[in-house]
Amino acid sequence: MSRFRSLFGTQDMTVGRPLTVLARFSVPLLIGNFTQQLYNTVDSIIVGQYIGDTALAAVGTAGPILNLLLVLFMGIATGAGILSSQYFGARDRATLSRTVGNTMLLTLGSGLFMSLLGYLATPFLVGLTNPPQDVADGAVIYLQIIFIGFLGGGAYNILSGVLRGMGDSVYPLIYLVIASLLNIVLDLVFVANFGMGIAGVAWATIIAQAVSGALCVIRILRMRDQIDLNRDTMRPDKIILKKLCGLGIPAGITSAIFSMSAILVQGLVNSMGTSVIATNVAVMRVDGFAMMPNFTFGTAATTYIGQNIGAQRTERLRAGVRDMMKLALTVSIVLVLAIIFFGKNLIAMFTQTPEVIELGRQGLLWLSFGYVCFAVTQVLQGVMRGAGDTLVPMWLSVITTVVLRMPLAYLLAGLTRSADFPQGSPHAIFASLLISWTIGTVLSIIAYRKGAWRKKLPRQMQEELKEEKAREKAEKAGKKRN
Image (cartoon, rainbow, N blue to C red; front, side, top):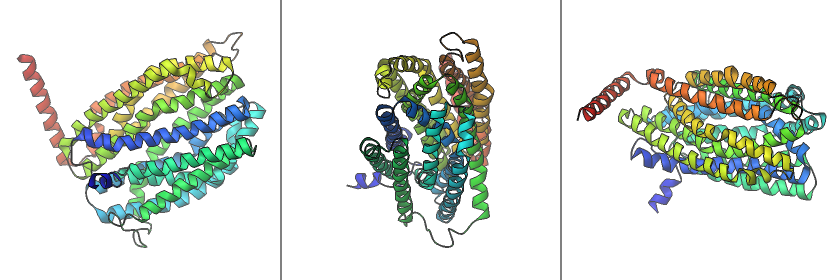
């Protein structure tokens, strides 16, 4: 019974075998990411099967725009998660309480602001991607309804980040499962039964997200054994807000860079026609499942490193990184093999058009190796963020997406124009992703080994890491001589 109870609550990642605590934390997180991707995928399956390829293309066009306007939430969530993990590890209840209280204030304010901004900016942002008119009309309807209920999704993203920072990955999973099941049921009711079309999919999404956000608020309000939420802790605190913004802004800029480049690349995809747009949507939905372990273990690395830095457990840092890398690569390789062997069947879930299915299968083959590379990138950048270094991951994202991926996509498209693909081959889109991911992994390894993130650690921990590294080198040198 005690083990069962310990699962449903915060986890102290500063004690116990690193591999064990990382796995215990990561499994619910991985299931949660799978569930979230599943209900996004169900949206696309229902749209593609019940409404058609044009509606599927509209949802795909809306995706990068939605992600762009989520960046404020993602930035706050990153900053809150890092601070929560460090103060939780340090057993600093007072500062942890002020951090959670100020995070809730930021969630409310940013949610209302982004709802209004997103609703008004939707027609302009959709126009930037230059889709066919019927696709554009569907994307505008879908996005404007989503922005009406934007606060619910924002609350879940931010507050689940706070819970995970304190080692609680189970309750966010439960809330996500509830929201996912509700979303699927409402999708079928609104689209299949009521014939509401793409608007029905959007309404189903915001209702489900509102439920998950409300459940996170209730959970945090009930955590009286870890935090104190009252007028004092929920009063704006300049120091806490400055730290949240200092850590979160680079992460938000990183997400914005990804999203803006995706919007510009989406414009290239849209110029290739509705069938290519639909193909890209299907591939990206499968891509989401392949990316799950990468983002999962990156988040786990941030929480683990943050808690152990807060507790000043230097001896656990390097061991944790090694164990997390083993977990990430093992799970990622298994998923990639499944995608290689069953890629055609996966794409066929979204459409009945033969040319879309075959093109999607080829796209997945292009991306397969990149998923393994991205696993390494996410773990190493998760370590940097856990230490409080969010600037280096931001600059790595700028290089990979702005300097490499976007120009590559347009260059390769221009080089592959033909009678069948007058605007360029869709393979150019997938090849540009693979190349940029691979280079990004190399750059992340270099940045991690160079060790600028270690300067964020307390001085004593920096010295202890240097001594530990020197001992490992001496041991390796001794083994070679023997």
